[in-house]
Image 1 (cartoon, rainbow, N blue to C red):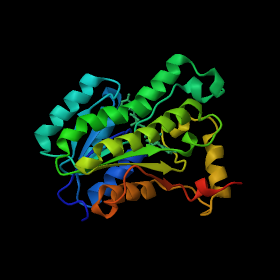
Image 2 (cartoon, rainbow, N blue to C red; image 1 turned 30 degrees about the vertical axis):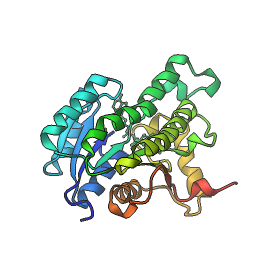
Image 3 (cartoon, rainbow, N blue to C red; image 1 turned 120 degrees about the vertical axis):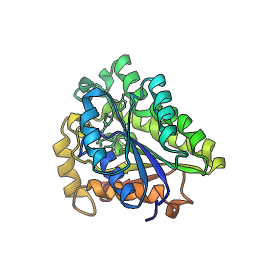
Length: 254
Ligand SMILES: NC(=O)c1ccc[n+]([C@@H]2O[C@H](COP(=O)([O-])OP(=O)(O)OC[C@H]3O[C@@H](n4cnc5c(N)ncnc54)[C@H](O)[C@@H]3O)[C@@H](O)[C@H]2O)c1
């Protein structure tokens, strides 16, 4: 029970395949109390059904592009949690057309949208969480290799993930004096709702199986367990880092 007495707020559960849901289960297994947010009415019922399987879990609506929704989610959270230990950011979005064409064709609008939802939201949520992290804390965000290497068709999302990873480092510097750690998990491709929006996703899975040192795809539970480690005191010396949970694929040159 490494997280006994700890409270965790998780953004990004859409359904049972979501990486955020696997993280929720790993944190709860070690004793954390959970709050899950959902993006809007479309996802409300499904997220509430999943939440009901973990007794004591709080659910809150929050679209991360809306400052007033972020403020009201944290205001509501204070009614259930007297402090917050862990914030998990599993949120990303880009327009479908921007993940199908060449990067050079990205529209201004599509670029802004991807950055707002997938990158800026981490800073907005960290700012809102900080006053509740009175006993220190751990902020964890999900990223992908497309931030640092070209992954064809990942396009504008790769640029957003590069900004997200830079934000992780700046936030780690700002919040470190309060013993709030900020880290990223760079996961290998996993079959989720968001992943299915990327053209050629099945090919990405195949390439990882063929080329990675472990010769297999990343299991979502491996990401959940790494998030659990980052939320626990076992990782107390780690901040501003990206941990790769990708069967080792990222070390390969060919
Ligand atoms: N699946 C993969 O292969 C993979 C690999 C590496 C990193 N990631 C990252 O993991 C994270 C979780 O994605 P996933 O693969 O579990 O897919 P998912 O579709 O289950 O989760 C994406 C979540 O983002 C949320 N979201 C989108 N726009 C939002 C908004 N405006 N406000 C609030 N929430 C919003 C959706 O509601 C959804 O819950 C993302 O950051 C993704 O980039 C995924």
